[in-house]
Length: 207
Image (cartoon, rainbow, N blue to C red; front, side, top):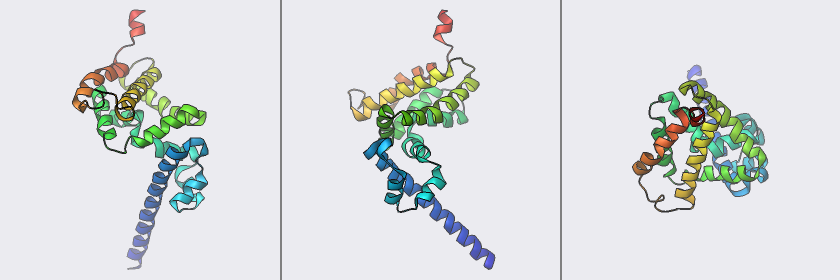
């Protein structure tokens, strides 16, 4: 009986810890979107979440770690690229485009990514978070999986292309991109993303 009570207490602490972690992520997203990377502080985020500052550092290490988790999460193209590669490399371009359009179509799924872009555009530290946490590791994975040269350029082209598509569709609402079906956009954009990732370098072919 004592063992069961002890296990119940541990399970309760685990659930409470996970709830606190998610609450920190939720309020951090709001702070970063409202204040930008530089002006949002860990202390203010902790206060918004109703937790001690030490808990934020316990879960996320520092402000950059919190920004990476809260602003990027699964809304950033290169995060999901790594996850999709775990499932296989076939048709990776169309699969990636579809995954993100389906995710971004769910409001407000696109908002954290907008916060990231706004901060990265003006804050060098935010740009470093994006590059250090995504670019290098994902490029190494692409190089290994597809045996291609110039993997870092390739993944940056993917991120840039999908970012542009997202801004046109969700922020600027440019027609007919904004109202096009997911299938239609996958058919157009998917092969291009596939070429970025898996095809031989056009520079090498022409040289």
